[in-house]
Structure formats: structure tokens, C-alpha cells
Image (cartoon, rainbow, N blue to C red):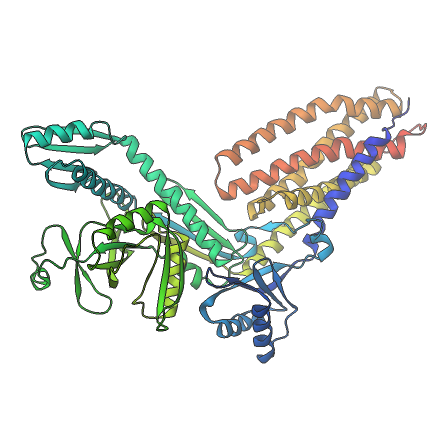
Length: 615
């Protein structure tokens, strides 16, 4: 008998290896030091921006490798890190704060490869360098906001229903409503019954009070919403920074991990990500005495806040609108060339603003800016304690009924207007966050990790090559060729998968795969030896060796693949990276060991009659 593959199988092997090699090729070209210029909502990237950047670099006598527009960014490639830092400073001075200028690393892939969709393998933070933030979310503040919204909603609805009440206040996680008479109590009890899902109604007919108590399910939903919404908002803020391949994900019950690979200057990232700001629009309390409030006698239903321009302002407690309804905010100048921020609201926000200002034309309305900062202390549960720092940044008389678009003025500088607009359009965080851990990995350390990982792969690869050649002779050479093809397949497949990132644990997975990849060939070759000892012909030995070992190879690899899938499903970032490369390595090694080597063996020995095998 002769061992021959049909033509389509040989073509399949060649095609798979050719595609993998093509998509693995960009990894040989490396990366360039780059400066990335991104537009904000108030600006655009066009040829004039490109010309400004080129002129600034030319005046500073910096010779870039290239300056091009890629998408909505200007990308400046330079030869070394010192030129990169100098170019960043020069571009910042030329463009000012109208653009986001960030340090980054750009792939040096040729255009013809990019036209085919081939991109280099994405490297994780530990290999590429960058910054890692671990953020903690203030869950108590998230719950407080929900309860404040419920309190305001109950007040409005009871007034609309003409049900008289003495007070509607928040008490911990409850909202307590005190009615005036028994009739009001009965009407409120009937109206509020089952009106708010997630709240249990506890009544006290003697005190004419109704307590809306948040259920545990509602509390958990609120906390999950706060985390998921903050993750979304942080992703928006990262996009504003123009960072490629960022990682923003939840970790545990109240923490968020943010990793920005390639970012070398972390000051801007920390400023934008760590800030927790929102706006509240409230009416100014012009009916009560400011002097009495400053002496400590603040009237019921009002609060005293400092004014950024100096002094204090007495505001109504009821919030007209919060920053949650802001869909866009752009910095600019008013007719007197003073900094301003133009704000656009969503539909619900526009309705609220319109309703509130309809009956307050001629009255002053204040814009309250609130920023939450950690005090450094922790509560009894070990959670960080946040302190709200609030100040009035603008007071304006309502001249007409407002809608979904308006502006705020009274901002001290254009830089402050830019930062405020960026924070507001990226989203107001549902709950304050605090950076509890910050790690910066320089590109030199990332390169050192790459070099050490590559050494581990190369030494493991070489030792396996030597062993296979010494022990299995010519068949060992075939196995070595399959091992090299397996590495190409792993890199090619990972480069093709969107979002796949190679980390240091992922390189460990590749090293492990190098050792495991020859297991299948060892089983096949040992089976061929046994068939030869059983006096079978070389062609029969090859045929039975591959067929008999197939079930054993499949069982061993499938169980390992299941373990890799479980690691990916339940593991965190580093473990997921290891699981991905391990799973891909298992699949590609089965292809190269079973299909690839048999195609080579059939091509060399399968088509002719031989008396002896070098195995």
C-alpha cells in the first residue's frame, strides 16, 4: 500500500500556512515612536491641522519619519523617544489646548500589508508599557443619588396630585413621607401603592407617615448599574484621550481596572480618568437672608454653597437637573470673548429644564459644579470615604424659558472650559471613583519583558528541536518543521482575532505549547516504531501509526482545551491571556502534528516503496 494525500488536502495545508504567515508578517516590522493628535468635539482634524504640525516640527528642527492623517488623528512618527518627547511639547505649544496630544507607539506595518487587513499582534500592558489604574467606586453615593431622585420625584407627584405633605426626606436608604391629615395619608397610600418597583411601602397611620424602603434586589441593581455605567463612561473618557487598545473592565464588587497600553505620559490620563465631576442646576434662594444663612441659620429646604467668584450663595435644595442628562458639551467663547461651555440635553433633560424655567422667568438660576475627592479615610466596612466639594460656577437670570440647548459662563479660563466640557460630554460618573492603585510600566521594561519571553520561547524551541532530531532522526526534522509552523500559526491567528492581546502570561502559554506541540508527534512516531517491530511494512506502519494514535491525541488535547476554556471563562486578565494562547496553541498543534506532518511524511515517503524508515 502507498500513503498519499489527495490534492485538496495538500492545498489546504499550504493555504492555511500561507495565510498564517501573511498575517504574522507585520510582527517583524516592529513599532515607531509616535505622537498622536486627536480632535475634541470643538475641533476637527484636516489639512490645516496637518500643516500646523509640520510647520511646528520644521521650526523646531525635528525631522519626523512621517506626518500623516490616519482617520480622525494626525500621527507623527519619529526615530527615538527623545524626539518623541520634544515633538509632543512642540505640537502642544503650536496647537494649544484645542487638541488632545498623546504619546504612543505606532505599528510600522507596510501599506500593502495594511491593505490586506494584516496588523501586528496587540501587546498587553506588561509587554508594551503604559499605565494601570485600579479604581474604587463609592457605592454609598450611588445609592444616595438614586434616593435623592426618588425623593424629588415623590415631592413633584404629590404636588401634582394635590396631596398635602409636611415633609419628604431621605433617611438612609429610605424615603420618608409625612402627610398633613388622615385624608392626605389615605390618598398618598393609595397613590404610592406599588408605584415604585423595588421599594417596600411601610406605613404608620398614627404618624401619618409612609416609608419607601429600598429592597435588597433594588440595592444590588443600583450598585451593578453604578459599576456598569461608570465603566461605560470611563471608556468614553479613554476614547477622548485617543488611546489605542485600552482595557476598561469591572473587577470585583466595586472596583474598575483601566489599562492604557502605549501611554507614556500619564498626567493627562490621570487627570481625566480620576476626576469625578458633574453639574447640578438649582434655583437661587432669593427669599431668605444670606446673612442669617452664613451665621449658621440655613433655612429649611435650602443649602449654602461657596461661589467661585467669592462669597457664598444660598440655593434651593431641589435639583432642577443633573449632569446625567447632558449629551454634549463644547467649549468656546461668548460674544465678549469670555470662556463658555455650550450644553445640549437629552429629551428628558430638556423637558425638565423647560418645565422648571417656565415658572421662574426673571429669577436667578445657579450652576453648581460638584467634584468628589477621597479624604484618605475609610468607613467601618473598609470603603473609601469621599467628600463632595461643591461650588457655584455661574449665576444667571432666566430671561426666557430654556430648552435642550443653553450655555454656562463665568468660567475663569479656556483650559478650565476645555476640561469641564470634556468631562461633561464624556459622561458624569454615576458615583465617585478614587484611584487606589497606579502602576506605570515604561516601554524599556516592556521591551525587557519581550526579550526575556522571546529567550524563553527560543531556548525551549531549540531544546525540543535538538531532542527530536537526536531521538527521531529524519522524522524528528519533520516534527521540527511542524513545530515552527505551529508558532507561525499561533502568531497569525492571534493577529487576526479582533481584541486578542499578547501578555507576559500569554508568552508563557506559547512556551508551554512549544513543549506540548510535539506530544502528538511523539505518540505517532512511537506508534510507528511499534508497528515496525510488529513486522509491518513501512507504509503500513505509517498508516496505522497515524490512525491508531489519533484517538489518544484527541483525548489528551480536548481535556486540556476544556481546562483552557474554563480558565478563560472564570479568570481575570493575566489568566485569560494565558488561556487564549494555550487554547489556540492546542488547536494549531493538532493541525500541524496530525495533518501537517502527515502531508510531509506522505510527500517524502508515502509515494514510493521503501524498506526502512528513519524513525
